Image (cartoon, rainbow, N blue to C red; front, side):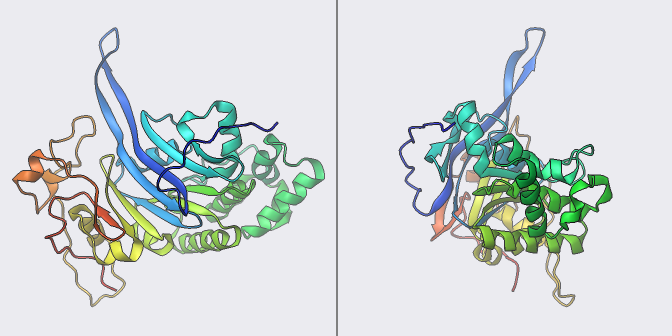
Length: 349
């Protein structure tokens, strides 16, 4: 059955982009008492906006709990956003606004938006064979069945570097890296346009991480995939991403092309993250930045800039006035009152 959908007006940022996220919010209510009275909100995602060009990779980074995984699941509408727009250029329906779609329309859209999960052990059903796991998206969407389904699954396994003879095996027979390849094959089954990678290599050994990242890059080139790559390891993000967006307590604090952000950060939080990246040269000594205090509470954030209690460059203005995310240099945006005057340290080449 083909669903008809009247596409919304194209967002101004539509040119060359596959995904446009605008002012995305996700608030979780805090309740108290017998009648569950709402006394506040946890601002998990608080006004995030970004775009992803077709065929490119955006790395979304930040400390644990900053809202990056919630953002990725809002895009797939695993969660319903509190507010905001998520414009997606579907190859069949054109531009659509994800939060406005019905459940039937979302079923059609999800064929073109897939996810690679963080844990290769818990994301695969131990009672299903590889044929069942990888073939499930094809069977559920009525794309293939019977011998055709088996042939397509075998081809998907070849694409991700696994042998077709493994079709009848169960997940317990494979290593962590092989399991993640199975998850990648499942995500590619319907030939999606957008793949959300939720820390897909964080649970793997370093040597296996490199293999998986190289595989993702090869698949992107072969199938013209667009990635949203969620991670906390900046060395991994630098390897695979074309653009990097940095989140702190639900807000986007900086975004730029990867090389530009790593060499010339404009936000003090980004500088601190980059200082934690291990340097491969033992003769290169860099000053490690140790941030004081704790990460702000998203249910009770500080006034002004959320980062000011931990920022070594904070001034009085930072304590009372929230900075806006603005373009400081061409293609380089940051939310810091002192972005133009500070000279922050990046990662040397």
